[in-house]
Length: 460
Image 1 (cartoon, one colour):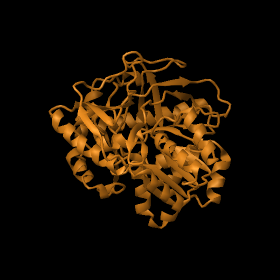
Image 2: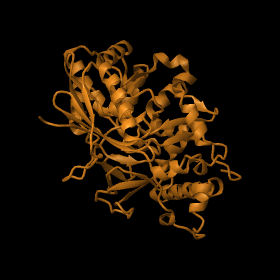
Image 3: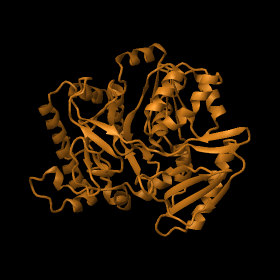
Image 4: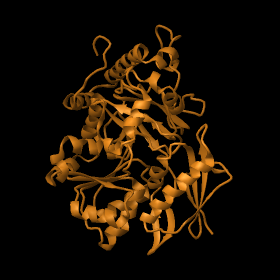
């Protein structure tokens, strides 16, 4: 970085940096991490009015703990002051996002626009310049596959990959895939995207026609394809399944691997931080500490020692200079480990606590219909006035929706929008009749476990 400008890193350079980092000792690794952190903080102080004010009283020789944590609501409330490019305004980004044909296209020819699912509150909008995209690509290129032979098998099959992800929004997965297809349309025979919002028979038809070597998608949605593969309606033979966006349980991993006859992998990532940790052959999620700092903390943002479950984490993204995420709150529960891993990677690793939403089970035209949780998120996320939701499924297709509105929003109006959207979506999935009522209660955690579920199937 020269003259206070943000670094510009191409994909090839990013791959080289990632490869070289793996060969360094721990002292050199920490030196690179601290150097990148210092540059990012200096840049944010000089170019982001939000951080300039927040860091106004920092001591000259500040330490990491001197930097106050930030969260999604605060950053979105100060979007225009947060961005380091003074010409970037939230209203202009939102106008750009009103046209869904812009998914995968660059805002002002500089930034891809991504949005979080909004499943735990209002969505965050993230801008990714070429360096941000290149670093994310470099991490995946060099660290995605736990088994070395997987990459060779993938190349032998022409590298054909298809992702089954939520479309109809600026989500990280489908936005990234579509951007590549728009930039390289000749790759349509090698790379494809199927919508997780389609009925299962249509997804099956697309997968059969494409015959992927690598299949990607949300675990809860890919789980619905197991029965299709086992009965022969789906007939594909991928060399690897790569899941993302949700926790991958051991049972789902085992069933997917048995049904499709291939290894099943995942990673730990988010829109704000990219791929935070990659899975190794031992099943451990090693932190990409050259590009992200992960702090396990308790509810009061106090550090949690290794081996103890954290209430959440604070992440610092070391490569996004347009929107610095410095000690940014992510409400995932993890356990950090620093003991040696048999895979040989010296980076600390994480144990993840899985999201525990239920697969929605409804009566359809032709029997029981399973609806993956992230499909529901994708539908309700487009109703921007909803801060938080909880959908309860009672017997006989009776659904109860708990809503927490954003400030200034009318709950009844939001419910009517949600009812129309869910009714239309479920009808396309083969569930023409539902009863949806607005609950008198707000979304709430389980009284005993303290866990929060967005979607609950309730017994009769």
